[in-house]
Image 1: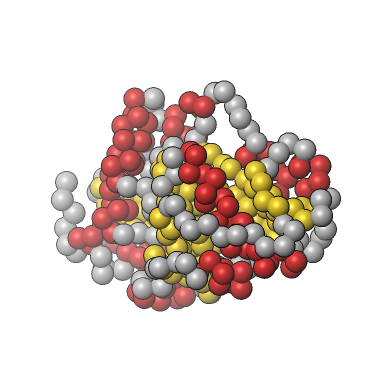
Image 2 (image 1 turned 90 degrees about the vertical axis):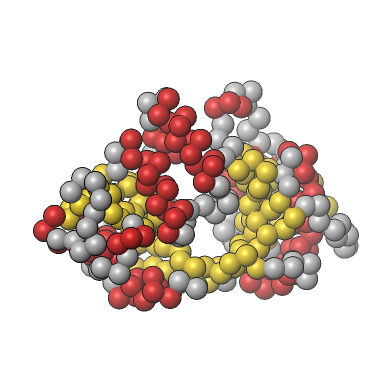
Length: 315
């Protein structure tokens, strides 16, 4: 059915996405260049393949991947004309809003307002976070209209491997994480940033299960040591859908270790080449802004800059 250029508001309603509509949903996402298509650079070809496998396995793959997400579509006479996804994150203390789209031929008819009204009225029990490219001025204006405020800006960088080797100064030691490090990680001082889930993250990176076919996410970690004390931890993560691209993050580093921030990053990038990783992505935000200056010295280009926005829960 072809939707008319002028829509009747009375015929619009929201419903959950049907399994058979998943491919069409993601097709619209890619066509509109919607935010949050993928932080890992998934191609449309890979998404189509996943949708095919999903149908063969009666929806099991997407049920696992989207187990904490809800996808809603805006329906007009049986046809999908818009939609969005909402995911529970941070131990269910807030929502992550993503995949907001309007069918390209129907943009400019106020459907964005209808979608945002639905979101802020039905999901007002928790804060809602989203990220939007800073060049998308119209979307930013719409989000601000419905109470979203700027939280921070995040820059995404792409590094083609191999990177140049950076020498480690002083008495620092960098090596892959070992099981014996877990007990030492639990003793990290309260001054270390983002240390709440470090032990859990390390256990994931040390998971060498033989059931590799059942694994979707992969992780590799390293520790920074000086005088027998762990001062920093770095992680690289990648998925089966994007097996040659990894995201690198340095989750914890003491003030003492900030001088070798770039070396932690560089060491991780070198080590994960053993897993056929060809490029890495890293995000610069307010937390790692100062440390990232070291990495910027050998970065050629910023891929994009995202604006992280947050709407607080209604009191």
